[in-house]
Length: 80
Image 1 (tube, rainbow, N blue to C red):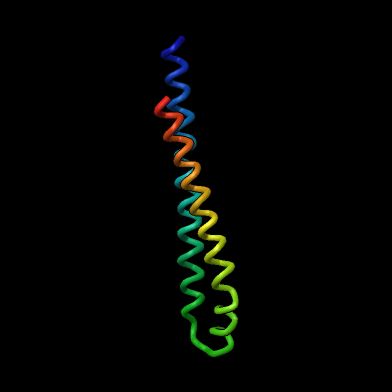
Image 2: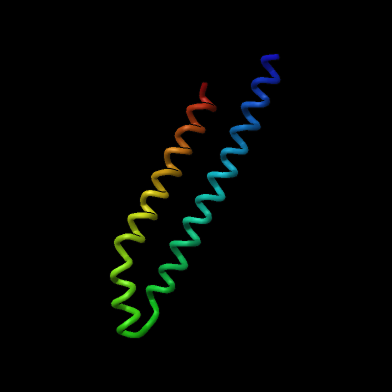
């Protein structure tokens, strides 16, 4: 019974890690896409991109923080 519990715990950790990886990939792709858009030429586009930089970077930072917390939770479950 303990072996089944441990096996289920490992399976759950692997699933959690898969979700974390998908979330991280989404954040990276979003960041790269926004960076490409920000490099576009033209004064109007440049001004518009500058007004969006701080909120975009803040959201990315919050998303990364969420991923860090998720990783910490998985690590603590794996260590117990």
